[in-house]
Structures are given as structure tokens and as C-alpha cells.
Image 1 (cartoon, rainbow, N blue to C red):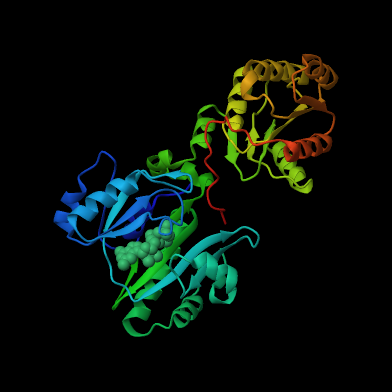
Image 2: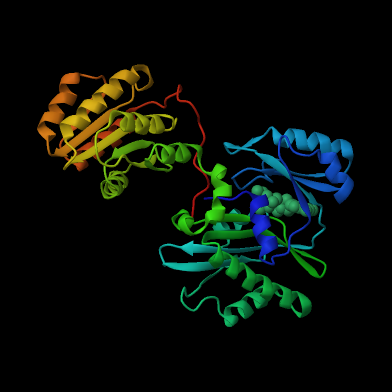
Length: 399
Ligand code: GDP
Ligand code: MN
């Protein structure tokens, strides 16, 4: 789960990471001019949206006068940045800085370790630095049992070129950030830019991703519920396991293992899954209808792969539910290729039900691999669906 910058900065302030004074303005919140009265001008007006690149998109502006402030707040409040809604603006005292650094802690899943990232070339173009000059980005793994080591901090201070008071502050900040990363079960904590303002260090941006698997031990996270991807929230309410992904093939299966294997096979066949969706056991039509709604609400979906293994759940019952739901949806699935793979209890009967329903674009397959290949081929030949309800692209890639 991603936090807004203002929420991240609240955690920073509580964790000893220095931040500038700021004030959050929600659409119905206090007037920006009142904030100007107490914090003074100029103020930096920052869009609060769950995406990076706000600066480049015009979502971060410096307001020097009261008129500019009123105008900037109104304009930024109405923006959508990279498909993400702006939920409010953060007004922050404008800081003059000499240097912009980049500092982050992430979970490196491949290495199964936390990863410390640092660069003296922070600011809005860190992606360009990472791409074109990877040597300018320091990467150090942290032993999960022993934690961040003093020697690693010393190396970092050295890279940054700090001495004296700044060196001490920076070392402390890195330690605090590591503490924060662990204590909050984060998978990403990123400061870009971390600014050097005279003899002070300040985190001018905050990007924090929390590990959803740790929700059970963080009752305080309920305050962040509204941050969740809207479709994921709807799924949770319907009791469906759903995760948005980047591709264009909708996936519906029963059992997490089944769905994950299907995602792997889709990648193997050269396709990209649009989602992970596990409807669980049983064949309740309401559940399948809710699952299809979730998948179809994603405009990028060009084909749908349904894969069910019948055990206690009978394939013929699932087939009935599926045919009823797809039939009832009619227009909203028209033109969308659907491949249904049924195996296990009642499979033959289920396939017969799908075939006899004769729904346009719906075909039955016997194995997951056949279903996946047919879906990938169908997606490649299928047009984008202009009538779907929203076009929100997936968020930035998660480490
Ligand atoms: P992002 O583009 O979404 O990462 O948004 P940031 O919060 O990082 O802001 C983008 C850029 O705006 C930063 O890299 C800074 O250069 C600049 N910026 C942000 N806050 C301030 C500030 O208080 N003073 C000044 N002068 N620049 C700022
Ligand atoms: Mn930033």
C-alpha cells in the first residue's frame, strides 16, 4: 500500500527525519490563504497523488504571492497526474537548497534482502540517472538479521562527501530511516530529493510503500484504507483476492496457486496478465459476476482467460454460473475473447455447457497451457475496448 507524500512526511517527522514545515489542504479543508498567514510566502504547492513525476507534470509549483497561491492550489487540486487523482495539496515552506540527493531503502525480492540506494544526483531525473549512469547510483544490500552496519553508513557519508556536522546529521538520518523502514514494515522508503540547505538536511519528498502482508499487526493502517487501488478495495469488499497488474489479459481462476501458475504461463507464452484474481472455491454466481466486473472495469483487458480446476467445486456448476454471467453482461463483454479451461470434477459436462451456450467469442479449452496460448493469441488480435469504465494505468513499477 502506497502512502501519500503528506502521510509519509508525518511518519518521517515522528521518526526523526527532518522535514520542512507544511500543511495539508483537502478539497473542503482550510483556506490556503490562512496557511500563508501562518507559514508565510513563498510556499511550495504540491499535488498529493499516488504517483511520482509530479514535478515534471506541473504538480509542484512555487507560489510567491497570495494570488499565485490561490490560482496554483485551484489548478493543482483539479489535476490528474499519470491517471492518478489529486486528493489535495500539501503547502510547504519553500526551501533554498544547494544539493539534491537521493536516498532509499527497498526490499530487493530477488536478493531476498533490503537494499540501500543512494545518489548525489537526486531530484526529478533520478530515473534517467539510474538508466544512463548506473554507477552514479550506489546499491548496497543489508543483512536482514544484522541490520544496517556502521561501516555501510560510513561508506555512504563518504560517497555523499559530507564532513563535520552534516556528516553526523546524515549518519543519524540514515540510521533513523532504517529504523523507520523496519518498524513500519515498509517495502519502500524513498527520499528524493534529500536536500542540503546550508548546514541542514531536509527530506523534501517522501515515498513510502507499506507491506500489505503486515496489515494484521498495524491497526493504525486503517487510516490509509482510502489509499488503496479502487478495484482492489472493491475486490476486498467482495471477498475476492485481486491484484492489478500491467498487462492486457484478464485472468480468473480458483486457487492462488492456480492463478499464479497461469500468470507464469501467460508470461511464457509472450503475453502479460492484467490482474491476479482468485475467486476461491464454490461457484456462486454473485462472486463470479463480481470478479468479472472487476476485470472488465480495466480498460486494458483485451482477452480473458478463465481457468478452473474442479475438486469439491464442480466444473459444470462453475460453467453454468459463467455462462449466465457472461450472457447477462452481453454488450459489456461483446467482442472480448474469452477462453475457458475446465478440468477436474465435472469438466466434460462443464465444457459441453460452455460450448452449447454458443456465446460469441467464448471458447472452451482442455489444459491451462492451451487456454493460455489461445488467450494470448486472441489478445494480440483483439482491439482495445473503448467502452470500459476507466483508463487508470497501473502505478509505477514496484520494487
Ligand atoms: P516528484 O516530482 O513527484 O518526485 O515531486 P517532488 O516532491 O520530488 O518535487 C519535485 C521537485 O520540486 C524536487 O525535486 C525539487 O527540486 C522541487 N521542490 C520540492 N520542494 C521544494 C521546496 O521546498 N523548495 C524548492 N526550491 N524546490 C522544491
Ligand atoms: Mn520526488
